[in-house]
Length: 393
Image (cartoon, rainbow, N blue to C red):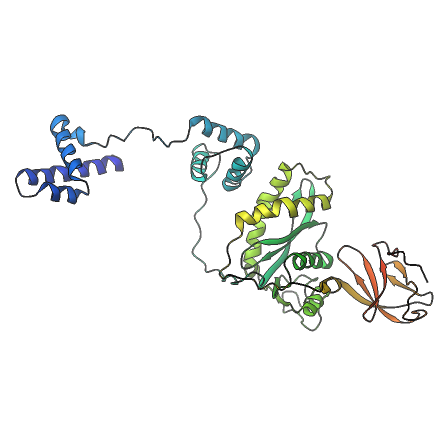
């Protein structure tokens, strides 16, 4: 006997008992109906059906009839066919989003999941482990950002690093791009993209990779007295740099990467990208097409109204978010930078810069500049060729 049959039997016995008390004069019709949670009219209908049809007249007549709101069998079959043919490696949520976006599908997520499970195409989610308390989010966007990278087969047949910078308060991703290998340049590029679009922020939370921190002993504390290029740039901008000392401490960004590893390769495949695609073309598509949809689906509202971002009105961050090192100018008025000889052009500051200490800036896009104090005395492309029609000295 199933649960429905048991409940039907209990309802019948309860009704017969109250009907008997009513017919004996011990209970009014209104009181009996109220005790059953029904109206007087329904009580009378049940009484008449019991007298005319016997106990079977009290059965719920909706049982065994298909719901008028039941999904059409043809639409369910179409959905199952699309899953098998094109989306077999998608999660149910991701698959449901694609159905609504690409195939004019109108049914809800739950009916989709239930039918996929009934067909044996997906497994029910495993039971969650014991409750763990998450670290509270920052209440305002711009108070803390996370930056991390994940090496994965984002495009077929090629292992690349995806560098992501996201907000702790909302989980919104402000910057994401692929590079052959993460490092100082990619970290500075991510920071530059965020500051250009959102503004200056308060804190940056990262792992202890060598491009973020100097760590004298493996697994030990970072050396705050020996900043890396990223650490120096953050200090110049007034941004606090926080190191993570365990993977669990970076749980928010780790969970974001699990979602990205599941979704982004499939979205790239649907967009027609393969292993031969130019990385910068893919990066433009990620920034313009993927990130808006991702943030709409996964970003949350901040705890408080407002923002902790401060506009970078003077644009000074470009000459901060770059690699900076000092060099001495040679007797031929050139300076050597990573195998490239940069010829310093004529300057009104002085006749030449021979044996002068100058500062080299290499920007995330590969461009180079030479500074003498606050003065920019030379600009070069990534190959070391002078820009802006500079004439070599």
